[in-house]
Image (cartoon, rainbow, N blue to C red; front, top):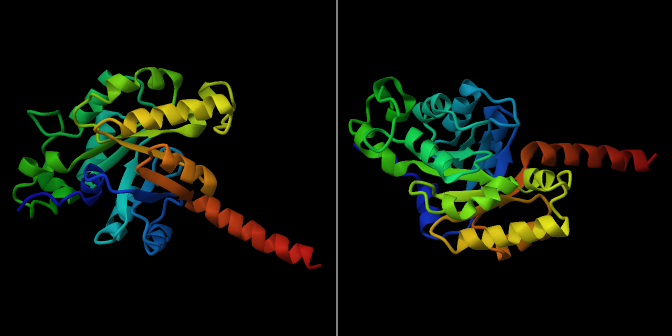
Length: 257
């Protein structure tokens, strides 16, 4: 029995448009709720949301069999952290602040069993192998690993062409807020200088063998990013959507007084 097929990886490889949303509540209940909306992918965020290994695993469990593919974002690309989330069942990782091809290659190797990489082979203990039920997990898992690297600094943009040559990188995600901050615009990704860099970067990624990704909460901006080449496009953040709805509801009642 082989490792489960990574549908999200296949969709990117086939050039299919994938719409996603951030899951930031760090709890399986709202993540399961998000999945009912039919997003193609959901980011279980371990960088800016208060997730740990067990909350990430619980969200992977509720997404089993759902249309929405889980994408786990770690706070860093450390080998030990990658090993842990792969063993609990993650197949697609989003790694922030990648600034060189060498760094991307190191992450690729951390996601793969030898001889292609350095992933520890204790799969019998792992949820990923269904606790040794998947008899050929180690022999087939490498092909189902999907790596999305975040390029979100000037150094990353300068290294983009080299990063795009790295075998094992499936997509490059432009982080607009961090990029804007690094360019001196305090997170304002709409600044003309920042927009020009984002447009050029998305176009370069789309013209390569990798998929281009980005996040935009404004509908018109998201459409623009799609026109510029974004293939996996995040169009919402759950905690922001909830907060805006709650504030809007209360504001309407205040206005009625």
